[in-house]
Image (cartoon, rainbow, N blue to C red; front, side, top):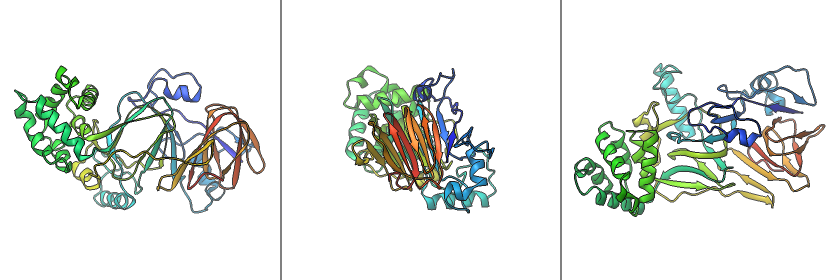
Length: 402
């Protein structure tokens, strides 16, 4: 059995006007469409309009299916949630700087807020559940741009020197506190702490003004100053625009993958990608947002390692199959079909068609899926195969290949 999945795109303000529509092959909705969710997450559980073969079970969402038949769908009668969440993400403007906790940090943080009686919907609530939220994103658009992790010390030192040169004049007094901190380029934690302290507004304004000037375009750090200018247009006065200058900016090409483990500060800037994560709401923000920034907790869980960004290379069991499998308990497989069937692992898994038609075959059913269609593969399906000439994505716990 396969269960068809549909959903309504999330209309966050940063969403693209046509990215999700272009991926799924349907008309654009006329407003921002940021994320299309596939899973049981209570924030937007997938709807289940039909099954293959047809049944009269009548469960309106995948969440309802799991509640009714956890053993059949997830492989355990004690299971209550699908632990992964698959998204099509389409960003037109930058998302917030954010970081996710480790399993231990999530359990501790959630228990602490519950013990202190912090309301689940409180503005200052940091931990919505006791789970980590590692995630990967694979670029689908020609360019997917992101910030990820802190830059190597040598690059931070170069930026500091270029900023000092640009500020040799009236702006020096406002920028001087930042330059003093950047004099130790191997220690970015004090810089982030100070920028988020609430007393750096004058410095942030001065850095933005310098970054937007003509001399900055001729600087060795011209690309970094351009990032500051770009972000300041969307988040004027936000200290995150200067924190971003200390971070790696990457451009992913189609098929390239970024892995955001626990502790890594990151932000997606623009583009369309396929995102897979543990189904958690635990996000601690570090700027570029009007939402709550818990500086103390952010600094506690943030990794301040400084290194070049490392993309996650896929494993290739065959020439047209790529498996992105971070050390996070899930795997995302993409199959470019070449006219012959490919055998994949079984459920629980979510299969999404980027290009069709695709023939999906299980133990006792075969169904043709078109572009933009998605289905849930229950645990009772121990192996499936796909055929045709399209492209499919398969999100699963563990390894998704057979």
